[in-house]
Length: 219
Ligand SMILES: Nc1ncnc2c1ncn2[C@@H]1O[C@H](COP(=O)(O)OP(=O)(O)O)[C@@H](O)[C@H]1O
Ligand SMILES: [Mg+2]
Image (cartoon, rainbow, N blue to C red; front, side, top):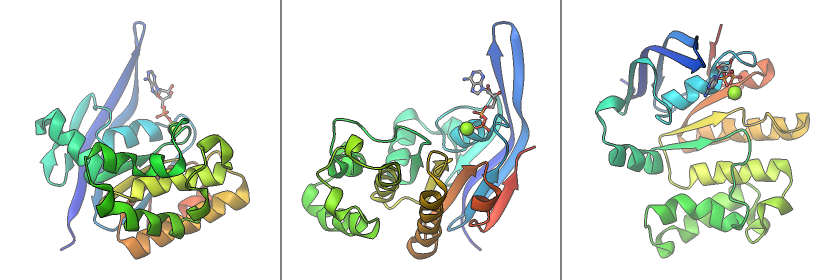
């Protein structure tokens, strides 16, 4: 049986604005098996980002439970959760993924540095990933010197360097033109197939959702 890496049950989330409470998620169930590629498809404002943040353990649901690697998030200490986020799960945001005053190489290796890993142990692997993502000759550049597509690939490289079990992506093609968006989608499908990483991707693009092996629709 494939390993269940993520299981969410009856997730509800309300936001309080002044005295008005709005329920954005009204009981979402979601299960992710190792190596899957799931697209969460929905219109703007349907609660996709909210759900993704909760699934990734970045935000807490108002009620319902999330289990990461068989452990209930509510029962994992903050420290253990932070370590899981560094090693087992990565996140690619829609915008502003990179630290502006660090080079591409420094941005990509940041999670490894924060995890106090030795550069001699990861150097070759990082070079391989940068090569794979077409960023080998961009390593010394700063984010502002890169195109939008290159910036997004650097964010994907950073998500990959830790060899995570799952990468969460919030509209990874949202700020790219059609051709660059298609290239990033091809790349993600390839990463999923060849690196065995499960992907949970939020998108409002019906076409981009088709790259996934399963589509979940937000209503
Ligand atoms: N921190 C917040 N405080 C109040 N309302 C929020 C907050 N985050 C999201 N919302 C509201 O929740 C709804 C869903 O937002 P979001 O999850 O960002 O949707 P999507 O990613 O599908 O566009 C929106 O109406 C948004 O205004
Ligand atoms: Mg969003």
